Amino acid sequence: MTHQTPIGTALPPADDLRILFAHGAYDMKRIFDATAHGINTMQVSNYADLESALPEADVLVVSGLWKNDLLKHAPKLRYIQSVSSGTNQYDTNALQGHGIRLASGQGVNRNAVSEHAIGLLLSLTRRLAFARDNQHAAFWRAEQTDPMQREDELPGKTMVIVGTGGIGDRIAKLAQAFDMTVIGVRRDPAKGKGAADEVHSFKDLHSVLPRADVLVLSCPLTDETRNIIDAKALAQLKRTALFINVARGACVDEGALVQALRDNRIAGAGLDVTATEPLPADSPIWRMQNVVLTPHAAGETRLYERNVLSLLNRNLDRLWAGESTIVNQIV
Image (tube, rainbow, N blue to C red; front, side):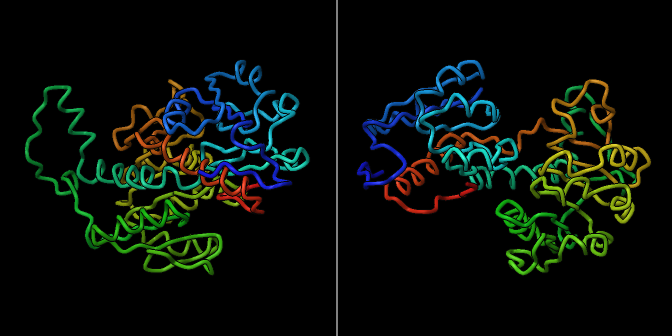
């Protein structure tokens, strides 16, 4: 990481810089300070402390604690590095008006989310989650005479992935390692099919859904993807199809999904996200036997802090060098 500051750069030099880390769980300051960079750093874990410390910060590393009202407490702030890939919580027009740069955390959990998606799929096909339930009940299941109640295999099956950015593309690569055929669906097919065997646009989604043995959502939440999987879409799937969601809960009509699972209209679902989080105690999803549920943990990884800090360092270098663009630039 370079420490020289060209004339006219928005950021002060390293020895005058103050970075504020704000997160309820991640200890980024300790890891960042271990590199002996000589930069003044602060760390908070709640909103009240963030509001109090923000007036001294030139750089803020944050995600869920951010509220746009904080802008009035940020006279020195010039750069926000989002910890998460999602940036819907930021008023980009207001940031631009205050001369504050914003970069997303896109890519920092690419490996984690893609591997989690495959983990949810294997939990369903190899019935691992149900085996764990039996373990806790001290129940040794007998061999299954009904083939449909047995574990399943992936080779030869077709996976449809909605959203083939960095995460979706790696899911495609992992699926192909299991000898699956992969169909990608993305907003702009002209950007290429990546690792998928073929690619289609969102408007063609319903035409490819009947081919899916596995439907995976790994798309961002936008106006276009909100409720992209609704009752009509679910009705296009095979009764043996599995649904995996590592995107956002609002990308799915949750009521329609619950009904499809109740009616065995689809075989099962692996869900890392839900419409309301935490999932309400009275949600039927908790008790559905054909669902594997994780608590929005797909992006969690022991390497998360280091991945975010690597992105932060790259962008600090760009800003110090006076470059016009930063990595994962939003503003």
